[in-house]
Image (cartoon, rainbow, N blue to C red; front, top):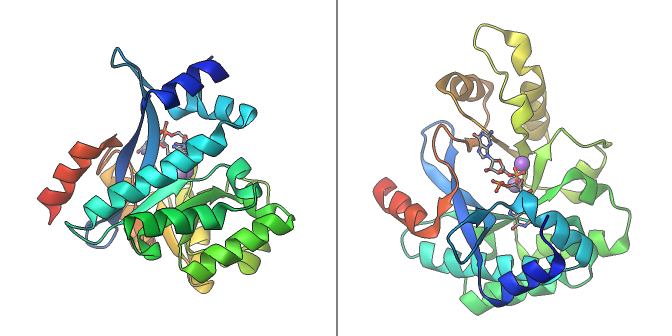
Length: 253
Ligand code: G
Ligand code: G
Ligand code: MN
Ligand code: NA
């Protein structure tokens, strides 16, 4: 496991980078945006995945400067990408970041530093964050909503949660967890029961849906038939370095 000091040094030496996994509209396969995913590029070129260092960052409080770096770097990339076409870039927020007062101000600061519209940056949080009763969290979400920054719930359907928070916070998008996508089979209607229920509920609450972890044409077609709005997954694109994503965007225009 990596230590706090390893990670501090990595940040000081600029060893973090954002990779981008493309997201598509399900009806026409058009590129609509990407999820930014942090990686740690070691001096010898080895790439460390977030599962190996985000937990350390969360336990030590380093997630605050790290999360702020992700926010700024994402905004910088968005400002470049918007010169090529309209896109939405999503970033992941840790619960620690959302519980700390001042997140909305940080977001506003980065948006204006790079001159990008709030609608181009989406913030992903997990269900557990929205279940938080604290005033800080609800204040932050209402500030972000007022600013016009879209909110998505990541890994939707996997948390232990009441659904009441969906009305309270009015999120824009539910990301259907890949565990509800991996088993989808055209010849087995039961395989899609959960995904279909999520899509139906989202529609009646006027939220978008994005299916995660789409790996096969069969899964893609099942989701299209259910009226899911968007998808991401290995079928259409893996997370990739910024330069590769830029190529991807240029090709798709
Ligand atoms: O990138 P992978 O492909 O391994 O992503 C694993 C998980 O790491 C993601 O599901 C996400 O929850 C988390 N993650 C990736 N990038 C970030 C980030 O910038 N901030 C936070 N808090 N979590 C991230
Ligand atoms: O933020 P979140 O927890 O959803 O992170 C997305 C994770 O899912 C990242 O680790 C990413 O590399 C991974 N991922 C993206 N697409 C696929 C896919 O099609 N299949 C699988 N198994 N994992 C995927
Ligand atoms: Mn995510
Ligand atoms: Na997810």
